[in-house]
Figure 1 (cartoon, helix red, strand yellow):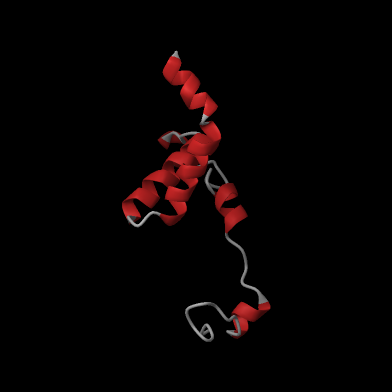
Figure 2 (figure 1 turned 90 degrees about the horizontal axis):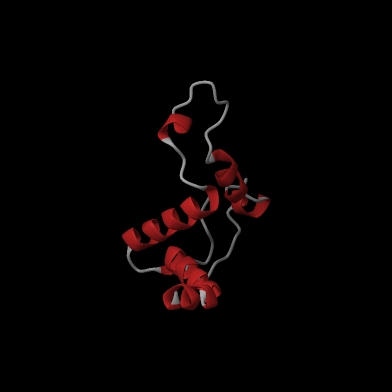
Length: 91
């Protein structure tokens, strides 16, 4: 059980690295796989029967996506947001 103890002792660092891969890895495939792994661990794997349930009012992932997706701000709509790469974002 030495390996299990090492993993448990370093769980925070491992989780931090996994999130960093999901957000900043150079490879799109690595970002996707890390993101999928995190989502599976947090939300649980969703059985295909649940995804294809015609009686469901919403898909299981809609709650998760809803917490990430937001309406654009007034400034974003006006195209007046300044970022590091562009003088002004175009609307």
